[in-house]
Structure formats: C-alpha cells, structure tokens
Length: 253
Image 1 (cartoon, one colour):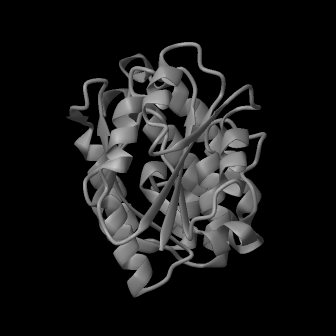
Image 2 (spheres, rainbow, N blue to C red):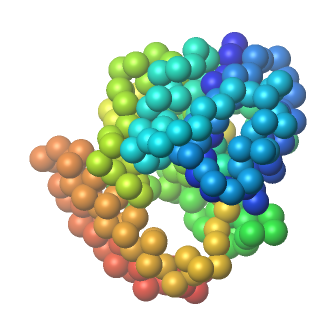
Image 3 (tube, rainbow, N blue to C red):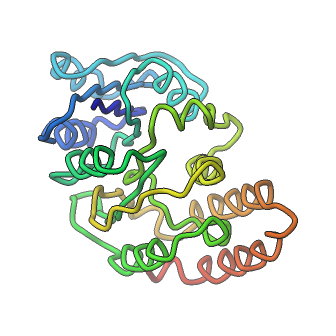
C-alpha cells in the first residue's frame, strides 16, 4: 500500500525540518509519497525543503490558504491512504506501520488514533486533553461527534476512495475544516479507531488565552449545525454547552 502525506506550509522554518524527519523516519511495509505545499514562505523554509528534495516533492507559491493547499495536494498525489501533517506537528515512531497494519487487516474508509500536545521545545503538555479525547474516542458514534470534535487532525487518515466520495475541503472554513471533513466522512462510514498515540500537535504559548480556541470552537459549532439532521438537533445543545464550558476552562488546561 502507499501513503500520501501532504504538508501545508507557510513560514514554519523553525519547525518544518522536525516534521519532515518525523515522516521520513517511519519504517514499515508501505510506500511513502510526501508532498509539501508551501504558500510562498519568506523565512528559511525553502532552504530546508531543498535539502530534502531527494525524499519529497514540494511546490511554493501563493495560494488561497491552507484548505486550497490541501486540496491541490490531495488531487496531485496517488496514495491509497491520505493524511496531512502540518509543518509544525510530528508523527511518532511506528505511526504509519500501525495505520498500514490496520488498513491491510481491515480496509477502512478512515481511521484515527490518539494525539498528544507539545510546546515549542517538543515537550509534552496538556495531557488531560489527550486523556479526555481518548475517552471520547472509545465511545465513538456519529451523534457523539456532532456533540464535540474529539478527533485530532494530525492522527487521522482516510482512503483515496473515501476522499473521492467526500470531495474537497471547504475553502470558506478557516479553523475547523478538519471537523467538517470528519462529519462528511462519518456520514459514509464509522472510522477505525487505533488506540495508540500516532502524532503530536504543537501548541504555542501565545495562544494560551484561548482566543484562537474560541474562534475555532464557534466555527465548529456552526459546522455541526449545518450537518445535523432533524432528529440530531438535540445534539447541538450538547455542542453549544461544550463550547461555553470549555471556553471558560481552556486557559487552565
């Protein structure tokens, strides 16, 4: 089987080499295609990409944002299983082999695993969030997903066939485009859950106030409203309460 990993990038020269290394350190019985879609970085990103040209493809130029870069990457690759890893996040050792084993054992439309959080120095932080999301994942249902987004983007993979049915990422979404995509995939089929930590998401100290979280949370709530059917409207009440409560708690997590 073949993986296509898309890395959208813009001025992440301080982190992108770590991301690249975490992808290409993966070992197992699979092929790997890695495409970096850079939005025209002006820092040291392009110098890093040139050093790894023997292992990956990259394109640099103006785009319409992350969703546009991802859509171009998805359509310009050929892997059986697709994922995207942002240019400051990391895969843990053994991640692609774990996903490959799951796919070869039980071919899935999509799958996800656990994701830790790290600071600017790669130290693990906010373990309570990781534990919370794992508890939610163990009781997955589509209606449960409508109530809150507990699926971490860096630890999610989907098949080429599922992508072709679900379509491209919405360009008008800026924070929770991944949640919209999970809800679209979830209408097709339930995901396979891999109960191990597959990736690590980078958190920044300047976002500790939760301002970015609140923007993302309200966008996610409106996405859930758009996807909920009449019999699922009650789940939006849970989602609304979740946004309010977590908005208060977020700075302390």
